[in-house]
Image (cartoon, rainbow, N blue to C red; front, side, top):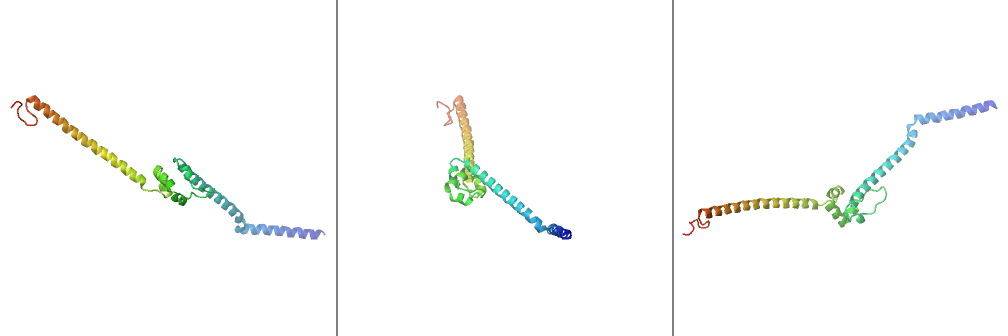
Length: 166
């Protein structure tokens, strides 16, 4: 009975050693469990990054007055739907007007902000030109007033250039 038990024990030891040896020599068997863990970790990290990016975009849109109620519905972990945003003319216009950088980032930007900036610049230039023209007219009026004053002081009519009383 004892030799039979020793043989069984020896065979079990041999099988255990053989399986340990095959696992250590076969890297696929060892890595398959670690690959799953790594894939799960990567997937979770990816979903978390997408979610945080989407929330940041939604938070920035919510800061715009009247835009929060127009946001399209989104499931957790899904990216912000720019196609749904592009379909909403009101939301797209609000974002383009109030936050042109975000509109440009989302791909729904318009030239509205650029046109408004050009109009502001044109208004500023017109005001500057008007100020220069006003200054020139003021100087011309001051010179005419000085000429009239000197002419009357010298006894000359400033309009005709003749002496007064002749």
